[in-house]
Image 1 (cartoon, rainbow, N blue to C red):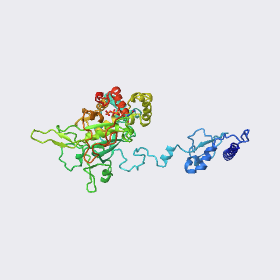
Image 2 (image 1 turned 90 degrees about the vertical axis):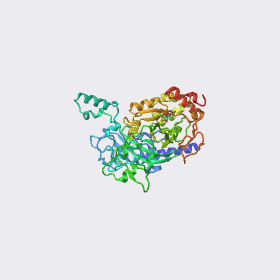
Image 3 (image 1 turned 120 degrees about the vertical axis):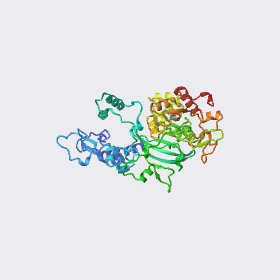
Image 4 (image 1 turned 30 degrees about the vertical axis):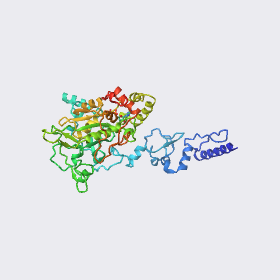
Amino acid sequence: MALHKSLSEGVSDLALLDMLTAPDLPLPATKHGIRRRDSDLDPLLLATAAAYGPHVTRNHYAHDFFPAVGDPRAEGAYDWTQWRGETKQDRKPRLKYVSRQAPRSQRLKDQGLLPEDDKENGKARAPSDPLRRADNLPPPALHKRSAPATVSETLSSTSSQSGTVALNDTPSALTAPDLDVKCMARTRVPTPHGPIFLHIYHNNHDNKEHLAIVVDPAQFSDDNSRQIPPIRSRSLDAVWSESETEMDRITRGAYVGRLSSISQTPSTPSEHSTITPEHIPSPLVRIHSECFTGETIGSMRCDCGEQLDEAIRQIAQPIILPSPSLSDQCATIPGRGAVVYLRQEGRGIGLLSKIRAYNLQDLGHDTVTANLMLGHKADERGYEIAAAILRDLGLGTEVGEGVRLLTNNPDKVQALEREGIRIVERVPMIPRTWQRRQGVEVHDTHEGGIKSGAPHGLTMIGGGEVYGEDLDKYLRTKVLKMGHLLSLSDAPHS
Ligand SMILES: Nc1nc2c(ncn2[C@@H]2O[C@H](COP(=O)(O)OP(=O)(O)OP(=O)(O)O)[C@@H](O)[C@H]2O)c(=O)[nH]1
């Protein structure tokens, strides 16, 4: 009885919707006496629109019955307000339920809600805004690579040799733009390891905002007599436009010293020297790849969070300089260097694929095989942008001092060297549990930061060490399958 009641209620609902929505065409009735719901306009769609109000299905109201249009790009095809009725030519026997609006991306662009080319959090900027303009990218010399690396470079070098085609005559379809990076903003951030300068970079090869974490606390001092060149971004210190004010420059981080309500000195775009006195060790640099799981939610499947923390900690350690003579006291200078933080999540395969790879790993596959099973390479990362950022910071350039690179990954060293970065030393990144096994004190934290004895397993900045079965497997695969330069005999469970 109840079943019959609900069935009959359902039947009358459908009949009502049919009555409201069916075109005025005679339609065959079913054996229950209800017309078939084969209208082009789905009654359920209309019911949803009526139930939830126009704000939910606003765009559906721009759809209606129209004679089918042969060419969807015909005048008025997308804009129903422009529709002036059908012509003889258009006339078709069948009504079709079609959309008369442009694609959503086009509509947003027309309304000024979608930026054409500004990647900064999707917000449109006025063309006059000095922060928007990209015409002050660093001079080409800073970006020159030693060997031709792109189609355009190869083409232009061949053509200039033959002397027949000018550089700019290369067909644009064949040229990839030379990589340019630009530091959009820089700011001071206090961390458990001391203050750092966070730099945000844009580039013309991908849509990611790559970062540089610069450790150079000597820049806070007013002492201009120091011999060590500051680690500063050339593109940031450049003047971006004639209309740029001092406040514009300061707001984007182009200032010197410590910014405060009484200290506001804009930087000058002068070329900084990259020559450091010989007795000063080269800056310590790490090229770090994004790992949301390890760095943000404290995953202990990998040691990425710990590595980021450890890298900043090591770079920030004061440098003890050898004393010129036995009687002299050793001098110390503040630690200096940088972490370039690349948005290449999951070794370049992205977070979604990495998460799927984790499930395959739980089924027993290692990190490399899991990537391959998902149709990815074992490692899809590139280091051209990292090299360009280092050059912009004056690190590892041909003329200046080299860098000491914190890594166990030989591919990374080679890739950076291919990009022209001068690496004078590879400094290993030993996992903290491995260091502890070797009797190394691993909680040597900065004054004022998190104190020794941070809980184990905390992978965030200022945290302790990562451990566990998953991490063991992860590290073993890196050593055994990816050639990482760590000795497994140092591992706690070996
Ligand atoms: N595909 C995949 N990526 C992972 C996994 N675990 C961590 N990653 C990513 O690995 C990257 C870090 O690379 P690693 O191979 O750990 O280290 P590396 O940068 O090559 O080498 P080091 O300089 O010695 O640290 C980050 O982008 C992480 O997101 C995993 O299980 N699968």
